[in-house]
Image (cartoon, rainbow, N blue to C red; front, side, top):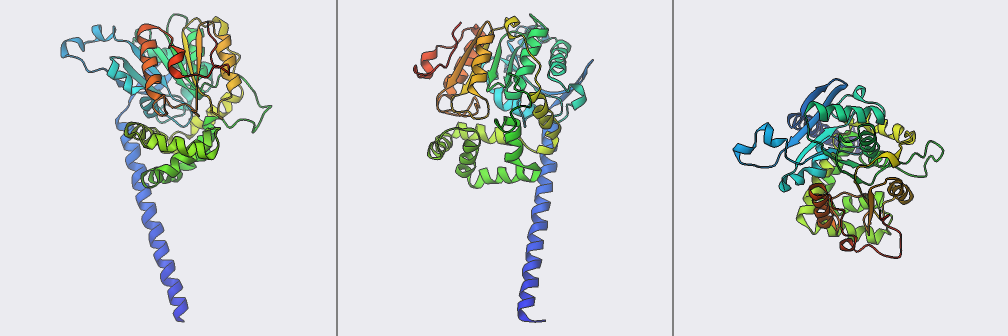
Length: 367
């Protein structure tokens, strides 16, 4: 055996050892991540099927923690978008507990421990949501829905009038486009499916954010933001410059992992969004506050405008410079969160001037 062959064999052995070590670390991470997810949620058996959820309640003196007083607490149910689960719902809305609002985040069918059989179609998921709220005797909760969950919230409000209160939509996908425009729009569920590429890809993205956060955030901005690359880089750097926003994005990123436990729901969302039912928006009387990033290339601007015009009591805010809208990141995140609290607690639509919305483009349909 020549010296060159020996070197090749040694290198091959080192590579195999590194691969085996990486796989062992990855498998251990995946197992621990699943244990963590399952340990922080509960399962509710409704007459329509099982629902996984987490319940975050405001801190309160012991004497007002009983169920009678809890029924007077403003309540929000958060419906995550594609690639999520109850943990992503918490990432979107658990900050509301600091404003004495109870937050329940559910895993929609096909995500984590809510079986797909609990609700395949948006109408069935709307019925499941209502059965969930009814089983817990929630006092006319408000709804927060992200992207692919928007039809579920709107259908629930239409099918069960007076059961739900206010509705807040982030980057909603609720207008039917069908299968006639393949490839024209990469919806969030499809985009995130490609961005994370399986459980190993999820693990890699988390490591990338730990070691090269600017690179990962830049690539994420490029994925969903219609700005030029330099502007996407500036957006990434702006988020990293604020510790609270960096931490929030880290939690959101974690809430997309592991992908295998969410894949049934993701793929179902992709199919359902292309064949959405015709929702009678004009019959939905609930106040609806719609947020969309002005630079979002995953949810078409014209769809959000059609939705806002079609709903009798809705306001659309298209936030300058934002891409796919995540409420706790971006230059106007605090204003967004403040306006949500006011909307939930007081029913007031936000003052448009505080968002510095440009007057030369139609951003809001005022009612």
